[in-house]
Every structure is written in structure tokens, then in C-alpha cells.
Amino acid sequence: MKAITYTTSGSPDVLTLTDRPVPEPGTGEVRVRVAVSGVNPTDWKARTATSPDGAQVPNQDGAGTVDAVGHGVPADRIGERVWLWEAAWQRADGTAQEYVTLPARQAVALPAHAGFDLGASLGIPALTAHRALTVADGGPQRLAPGALAGRTVLVAGGAGAVGNAAIQLARWAGATVVTTVSGARKAELATRAGAHHVVNYREQDAAAEIRRIAPGGVHIVVEVAPAANAALDVAVTAPDAVVAFYADDGEALSVPVRPSMFTNLRWQGVLVYTVPAAAKDHAVAAVSAAVADGALHAGEDAGLPFHRFPLERAADAHAAVQDGAVGKVLIDVSTA
Image (cartoon, rainbow, N blue to C red; front, side):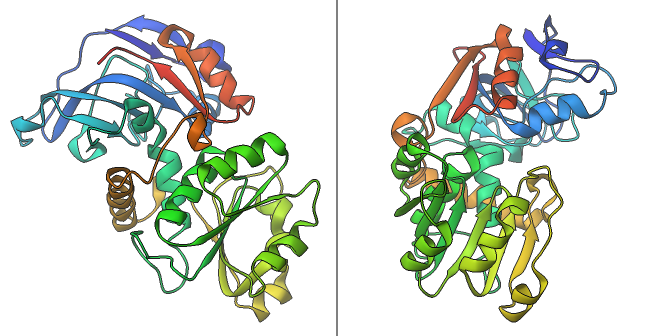
């Protein structure tokens, strides 16, 4: 089978198209014929961080069809269309290959109406968004229709992959969604994702506009740039709110202490790979339910345009994400 591997850290050029044996699933595992592999920022960051111990196949997310199962996995899962999460987390086998084996729980059924492109766009972005939306005091632990009714959510960077998922999940759960963007194109994408209010922080006084929309303040901030936006977040949050930050904008976060104390504002870091197991289970279940309800979409019409690459151009796909492509970068692996 064809696979992308790297054996040393470095630029996208370390990614090599190789030929490997088709793997066999172990106990509790499934084997998936990968149709589409999704690329996330953590995929290229992992590639540049440290040299792997042996050959590493990149990419956490993907979608395809189960074609074999290991001992302990029901045989009726063969032929099931699935989306994959954290395939390469602490494992050597990500989704940038024609077949991947992984624990059965990390291959989640896709309903008939959901395409592989959507499946490969879930994983890290949607699970991160779910965690950010469920760390507020009083919950909910798992999103569902009405779970965020009466709350206002601010999504910083609504045109990003996590921002897009957060907008859609928050709307599904009944929240009023406000998002900030840096330009007209991103505003269009955030609107297509379903944001009720879009604020262009380069053209508007973002704090004043958000306070106009939500006079009592926002209850949850899904934050992509905590250091840059700390003052804004303090200015627009309600008492007992939470700022859930999931990305590192390259600067040290300086928390405004007194205003944070006076409103009991909580600053909550979110790294999807290391969240508690129960929270991960809630996220997977909720994302699956949202997909089944038709509440999660991907592609241009959903505010998440695709950038497609064939498997042999995986290096270009990684470079596109590293260079800040707006939308979702996908690698077409096979015709599963």
C-alpha cells in the first residue's frame, strides 16, 4: 500500500511517499481503508518538533471504510463508513496511508448522508470545539439541542477549522453565537457557518460591538489567540464566564488579574489530546449526534472551504496548513 512517512523532524520535505505492507488489525482494532485524510496544525507541529522513533505516518484525522476487524470487534463493523480521530497520537500510524489500523473506538460510524470529506474534517477541530464549549461552570458536559440555550458564545477566529466547528456546535446546542474575524472574506465564511453576529475587529470597535450585541456579556469564549485577545475577553465577558483557549499565539499570556477576579472569570486551557477520558467520550458522542442531526457540515457552503491534494503531494498539504490556509486541507488517499 502507499503511505506517507517521515523518519526525521523538519520541513514538509521530510515527508516521503513509500510502499508498505497492508497492516493487520490487532485485538480490539479495526482496519480502515482511508478515503480522505485531514491535516491539522498539530500534524505539522508534530513533524517539526522531534524526530520519531522509526517511520511515522502523519495526520490524526480521516475517514474511510472498515475492511477488517481484530479479535473482540464485531464482524458486522466490516463495511461501515467511519470518521477517525487521533490516529497518530502516541502511535506511529496516522491517516496519510491507504490502510490504517487503530482502536475500534477511534473509528466512529458516519451516517449515510455524511460524506468522507466531512468525516475527515471532524476529529481534532470538532472535538476541540466541543471541549471548549463544555468547560464552563455548571456544564453541560455533553452538547445536545438546547444544552446552551440562554447563553452567548464568542468564537474568536470564526473562519478557522475549530472556530467553524464551534459556531456550528454552539448553534446546534441553542446558544447565541458571536464571532470575530479580520476581513470580509472571513466574515462571509463565519456567516455561512451559522454565526448570528460577525464582528470585524479591524473595522469595528470589537469590545463595544460585542457589548452592544450582548449587554450582559458573553458566557463562553472559544479563544484562538489568548495573548492578543486577553483585554478584549475581559471587556466582554459576563460574571462567571470562561475563556477556553486552545491555541498558542506565540506570546506569553498576561492575565488581567483584578478584572478577572472581580467577575470570577476563568481562563481554561484546552488540549484535546490530553483532556480527561470522560470528556473525550462526551465529545465523540456529541459530535456524532450533531452529524446525525445534520447540524455539522463542511465545505464552502458551510464556511469551511476545502483545499485538496493527492497523497503524493502530502508535503504541499502540510505546507498549506503551515502557511495558514483558510479552510480545511484534505488529502485524497483512495477511492474507498
